[in-house]
Structure formats: C-alpha cells, structure tokens
Amino acid sequence: MYEISAAAEIDADVDAVWAVVTDVASWAAWDPHEEAARLDGPFAPGTAGWSKPRGGPATDWTITQVVPRTYWRSECGLPGGKIIGMNAFEPLADGKVRCVKTVRVTGPLVPLFRFHFGRRMRADMFTTFAALEREAARRRTAVAP
Figure 1 (spheres, rainbow, N blue to C red):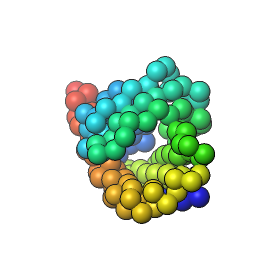
Figure 2: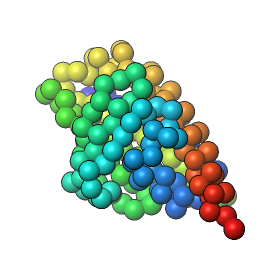
Figure 3: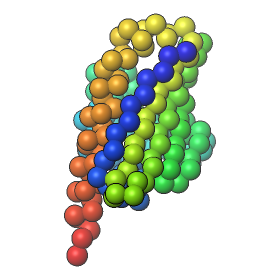
Figure 4: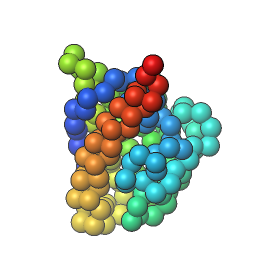
C-alpha cells in the first residue's frame, strides 16, 4: 500500500466548499489539476464518475461514501488493486475550513505511483486547495446582494 496525504486551512465557509467540490462538472473550470470531469448521477454512494487530470490518464471511479459537508470517498480500480481517494472538510472557529485529501494506492502498481506520480500528486493537492479557496470566494461574491 502507498498513501499520499496533504492538508490545508482555507478561508471559506464549509457550505461553499461543499458546493464547489460536489459540482463535479465544474472541476475543470476552477481546479488547474483537472482537464475534464463528470458525474453520472447524484453525488451519492454508488454513483460513477470520470475525470481526466492534466498530464495523467482518464479514470472511471465510483463514490463509495458521502457525509454531507464533511467527507467523501471514491474508488478507482487498477489491475490487481485500486486507488482510494478520501476528502475531508472540517469547519474551524475562525471562518476557515481544514481540507484533507488522502490518496491510497494498493496492488502491484504501487511502485509506479510511489516513484512516478507521488510527489506530483501531493503538490497538486496544495494547488487544488488554493484553487478551491478562490472558487468558493468567487461563488460567494457572485451571489452576494
């Protein structure tokens, strides 16, 4: 097993963050890591999705767990293993949200992820957190009276 994790505190409301991260069709518009994405149904366990990260292969995945405004998890099959993505959001007292993303890889492709993708995936997590903060603020400003 190989695990990559990153965390950041962003200036945002957890409701705004949740609205952004569950709007899969818009990921490519705000997240520089994503080239394209879609969800084939509601944001709920059992729903299939697809995404194409910039510089990486497109993948089919399935949402396996959702705790609204708090956590969501997805899984993607690999030959002899899988990729599990875990995304957690914790509102903090000072108007911030602690975001934690963890990617766990199992199976015979672990060495490839460790040596080829690992460092870049972790750096991309921080880029995504910053972009999430900007998008949550943009959406808040767009609906402000």
